[in-house]
Image (cartoon, rainbow, N blue to C red; front, top):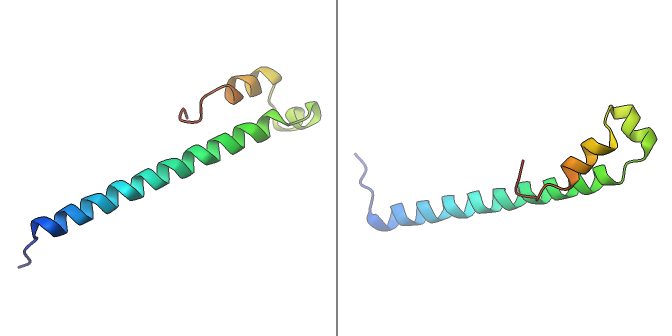
Length: 67
C-alpha cells in the first residue's frame, strides 16, 4: 500500500497545471499561424480547397483562443 504525502500531491498537481498551460499556449499559437496562412491564400488556392473569401474572413477574424 502506498501513501501519498501532501507534498507529493501538490507537486503532481502543479506539474499538471503547468503542462496544461503549455499545451494551451501551443494550440493558440498553431491557430494564430493557421489563420494567418489562410488569410494569405490566393483566389486560386481558395478555389482548390473549396473555400470562399468570406469563409477565410470569418476564420481569420476569430481571436486565437476561439476554436
